[in-house]
Length: 399
Image (cartoon, rainbow, N blue to C red; front, side, top):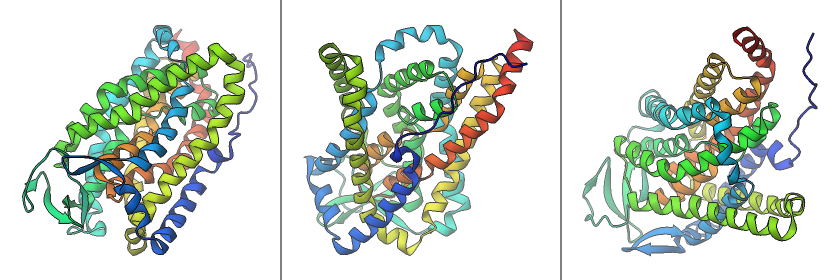
């Protein structure tokens, strides 16, 4: 007889969360239409940038949108809970191991296999993409850098690289960005330990400050892609550190002034639509640039989505299996596996846009991650719910 308390059914209450895939599809359509009727709009907005050594480094409109994508994520996190991580023990160490010692490298290997070999004929072995030059790199036109060649496009030096490598760059940026936002939803739906999920989110947010740039630079370099170290560090500062500090300080001030109840029920409620608008605006601008590529080869999204899907299933399966072998209870196992399987697509989109440009294949690849996130993660939630009894039995036998 099962003596465990019956938990109420958990559902996504936000229309945005429930229909994220639909919104992304609508953004694809809207962006393609915008690219047709106003082809210069996205390019003009992306050109409103902070320049360093005559190279556009930070697109101001996109940076504003991306800040409002990231800030609400950070302000929701009680970083004081990090000090309690020691009580969680093995689940925290497992998610750190999966996220930073396994996931980046499997993403690189799987994406290289599919995009650079199996699907290369479909993508086009001769197809190229124009990406931003790493600022500070004063190479002349015609010079080689990694797998790219310096060319002049509309009076601006750009790197021309194989298109599949540009897609690979986006996959790499997804692979080194463990989820710190939607995983709260996935953990909730799978009836996991919400407190542990928050602790792991906080720890991964802090870990990203150190490892995101290091692993990103290393794997991009291995893939013969431009390694803009300065831009990588700047992107971490702009898109992770700045909203993290702003979230921490504003959360502390607001709770002290208004109380935690007002903060959760009023302030966070106001932020939700702002986040949605910022994300969808960024996606519309991105697809207004990539509309021609998608229209000429609509299966592009499929070629990118397949390795991302395989990677997600692999990482989830490994994390969930290890959690079972380590005798976790189900409430800890579910979020520990979920946080590695899902991606922090906000940071990936921001970094790809900043490093390679809004019109790059790398930026497109990160958006494909958004497109497939919800259906895959909902499928994994169902897998968790159907298998939770196995963890209870294992715990009783081995305890």
